[in-house]
Each structure stands twice: as C-alpha cells, then as structure tokens.
Length: 181
Image 1: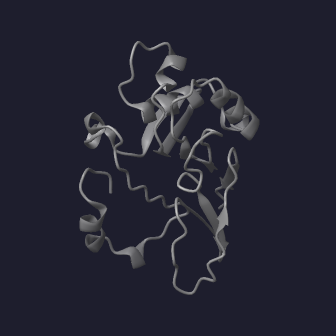
Image 2 (image 1 turned 30 degrees about the vertical axis):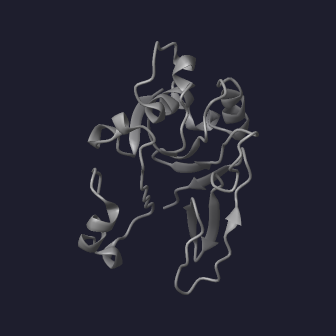
C-alpha cells in the first residue's frame, strides 16, 4: 500500500491476518507543508547509493537540511534528509557516531529527524530531535520486543496479548534490526 488516501479507509481492504513477512513497516504521514502532499511525497522514499538500495520513512521537519547538499532551496526535506545521510555511505558505516556527526552539521530550525532506514539486510530506527526542543515527549519513539518480533512506534500502542513493555528510545539512539533467514 503506497498512496495518498487515508490509512483508515485502506485498512478494511487489507487482510492483515494473511500478512507474512520478515519485515513490515507501516508509516502514516502528515505533510508539514501543504506543497509536500501527494504521491510524489509519500513514504517510503528510496535511493540507490554506493551500490545499496536504501529506503526511509521519516517523521519530523528539517527545513535547513537542503543547505548541507548545496541546494538553493528545499523541495522536500525528507528526500533531502535521506540523500544527506546515505549518499556515499554503506550499511557498515551507518552507525550512531556517523549519524550524530552528520546531524551536528545541520543548522538549527528542525523539529525531528526520527526515521526508519531499510536496506536488504537490515533496518535501523534512528531517534533524533534537537536538544532544545520544547516537545521531547512528542518526538520520542518507542520499541518493544515481543515473540521474536521488534516493534517500533511513535507512540506505544495496545497490542492484544501483550504485556505492553514499551521502552522509550533515547535521543540519538540507533536501534539495529538485522534480517535473519
């Protein structure tokens, strides 16, 4: 499902009980800027870099990231964020220290760079917001391990049969999810 309609309208047509996958991502997006609405701006975004196909789903707003790419203006901050972080980078180099160093170069003005990055062999959940944000709770991601499954969410969700052991991610935390056979 990749489109512009309301998720609530699409959900009844999805047979959730039949889904079988090593990795499932659900990203519901609300565009911060009205000009960034439509299919061209829907997630996941993808980019081929250094011989690797990268996918990303981003929550937050990074209106100054385009400057790190030498662009005169921003077209779509999420696409520019993906490009900024993965261009000429391999999955082996995609570490917490690498991401912290890259984000330290970004000019102030953004709300958050929370994202899920995915390659063929691994996924990463990256928690980032400026230290001076007035809304750290709003921009905090959560994760839970349950029955051999890793769950990542912007907000803890009630899951039937679950004890609800969600843990808040720390700011600048990178959580790796390797895909195993």
